[in-house]
Length: 195
Image 1 (cartoon, rainbow, N blue to C red):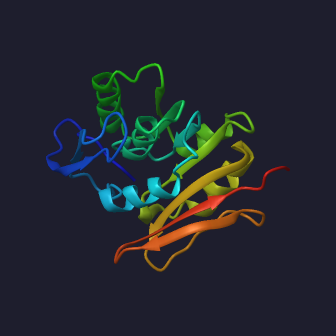
Image 2 (tube, rainbow, N blue to C red):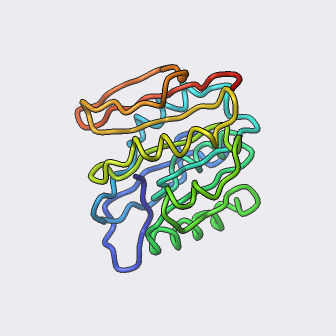
């Protein structure tokens, strides 16, 4: 889960957009329970894996927090990004960041529960999804099951989880690349070309 400054929440630190047109833009991270932004190093590795896959992509950052993953995708050429976050203070900060970047035409910020929001989405809606939920909530299996019909053929899903845990999409999805830090396992999956 990524984060942004909430009213009254002291800043925990900053993450930055690593590459593209908003390279080195700083995003504040407040000290909120469960908030654990993906590190710059992990994001840089992920976006190296995605080289050539972002141009024109429809992206979903499902537990957006700071929006670092979704905004990084836009910075590097994705056509659009939906940033879903349930915390009202983080949603306000996301909206402020989108305005600061001048990204209102490309980035849509949604306040809501990820599973409830997914249930209302059309099939084949997204090319790339970032799935980095609060680790303590154990949402990977439920969210992956709800998410798969919303993915376009040949789409990509990035999954971040605690080190030692490897939640994965259903059969037919292929592990493209994976890595691990002391705290986090991260993996990029590619979907089947046709259903």
